[in-house]
Image (cartoon, rainbow, N blue to C red):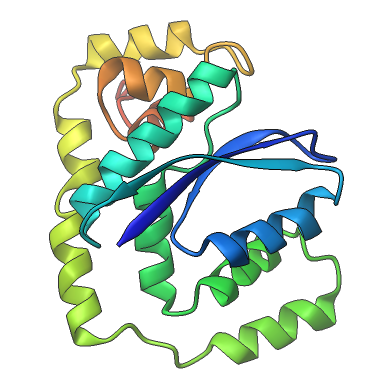
Length: 192
């Protein structure tokens, strides 16, 4: 499979680096979403298997390019691919996510999306692959931190400056683990 790493600049929304396996579709979608004035440049291609391990490699390269150009990091490519596998319909997944978070304003649109996605269950093979890919990600990360490190993470966190993703990279744990620490969901003192 061929993975295309690209740079999008001069956007109406935000500049970014991205990855796709469907260059023509992504090109048109980016033009529609970010405006016709945006410039989309293919930076490089990577060829490899369609596996979560290689998605990790490709996503890491995407983040490396984002850092190089000073762009914010988006959701990791591996997480995006796994999320699309879970829904079995990537477009529906994105729309449902938007509806759930309130980015789709119309209640009628939310209702239609909800009805359209009922009954879509990933196949047994897809669920097996996902369970292998996701085995112990958040729990394992949480177990590797001590209470003292969690306190240190809370002290370092500064919104929009020292972000959750920065902390996750620094401590080598999942984004979700840092989020739970910052929001005092885990690693909290019991009693006084």
